[in-house]
Length: 421
Image 1 (tube, rainbow, N blue to C red):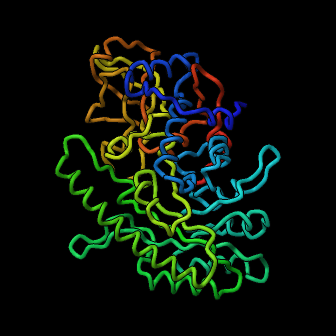
Image 2: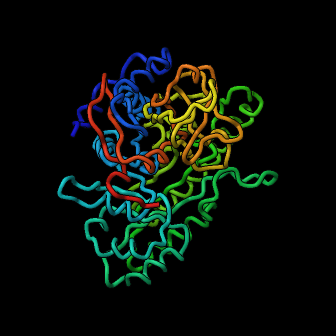
Image 3: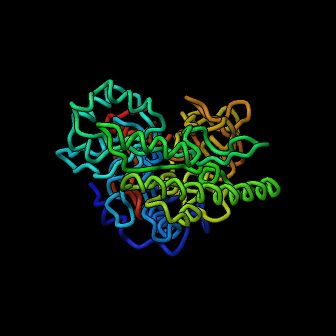
């Protein structure tokens, strides 16, 4: 197995071939795995190093927390967590959090795993309560007293050690004319609502309040420099500026009052697109980052940063229905979010191919049209970029590590037999 700790500690590259010569960049990716059958995925370690360095720079000294849903590759998550600038993981499922936190014969568990979403999985709750190590390392997220009640019905307070709890504070921007701008997550929005829930947790047997998290999705996950949309970009940037001022002020008030009730170990916030602005909030302890490591194409359209496309995948040409059309096997690996073209994988190599509007990316076949198709033959490969990150790992068992040629494979969650959602 490749020594990822050593490989990721190498200095970030000064050149950026993915921008200066993208054709050569993707061709080198193909050459490194040319003997592999399709579909195949590959990570450029120089590009990953660049993203690590850039994310760290943008955080300006604030520790990062790895959003596992955007990677779903345990060896890389483990290596990132061991970096000095990283404090732990933001997991997306309770069973996953327990798996990541527990020591195994082949690896130690991660000692700080914050669950980024509430769980009603009774089996996983029972597993957590029966796992002393996980109880010390996993923090469960709640936004309702009902979440506490459910835990108690699975395992009574006197039959377990206290469960570590974090409160999910809604970070959306509420405007009377427009409604909520953000994601529909937590009902806990006001200072009073947050402090009231905190008092309940602190006073309830079997629980220990240790954290607060919030996710300003309207800033972290919305591009503000989309080509050809100048007016819309200006409106989005204005909304994001207003939103960050509001959430920083509100979050600071919440944290100040909750700290009067109990000691908070963690205050997590933000995401890939909001790092600089989130870092300005002195009430937080760490910033969640996931997609920024692999550099999905959804994050190309930001004014203040530009991630390297570290991860890509190749599909085989299996048909040529027309002289200027090739059909690839598979490809319908769609990202979450509102159904739209920006949720499709992006065709990157060879240049000059595009989707057919009536078919787009298909579950089993993806037709592509363009001048480049004239040169492609049955068995050749076309390379794509995923949209966000996590969706790719659900389709492949392994991902190849590339650094001046092929180095090794790393297993995805799927490759380790894990399917949490």
